[in-house]
Length: 122
Image 1: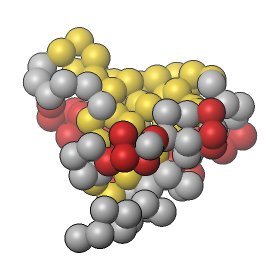
Image 2 (image 1 turned 180 degrees about the horizontal axis):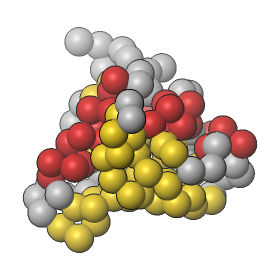
Image 3 (image 1 turned 135 degrees about the vertical axis):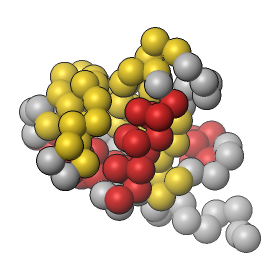
């Protein structure tokens, strides 16, 4: 596979160490990161919020609430990857974090490959 293939996609992955913890962070990065996060986030409209802001809400799958979260927004070149980025901080249950990632994939993201966030930042 070409190292640069898929760089236009919006990716999602667990950003914190796997395992049980108090809080886990899931990162979305790419042109559609905020749009995808807004599809699964219930709270403020993320598409209308400024960069470097944090918003309380819930992650949902259909009508089911998956978790109570905080979403941090980083627009464009002001993020680690230089792309639109959303970091979702939720409860650290591997099951819950997996469900949030599944919801993001269902909304249009794809799973990030190992090291892909750093590759994009470079």
